[in-house]
Image 1 (tube, one colour):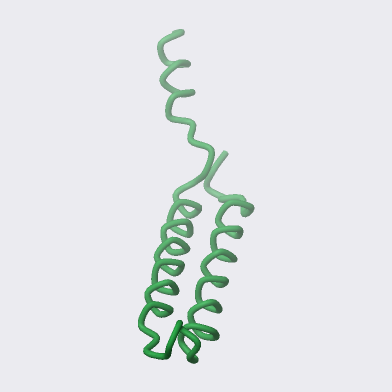
Image 2 (cartoon, rainbow, N blue to C red):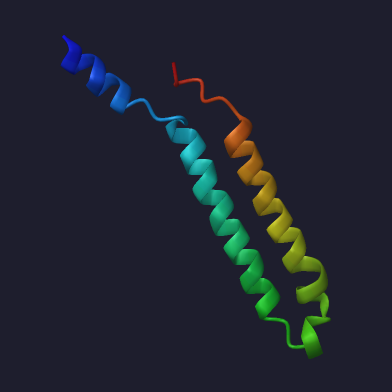
Length: 77
């Protein structure tokens, strides 16, 4: 009986499946934002992509990460 309790606690992850899915989406969004910033052709990245669009996409990725960490998965007990 002690073995089953140990295996139950070993499978008890801190987040649910939806949390991890949102975390992956947030990481991909952050990566995509940095990629957008690197595509800017202006000197020192002072164009629209480097100063406006890229940082907004990165900020959206961090907001998705915060949501993924702070939300409670309803399927999790």
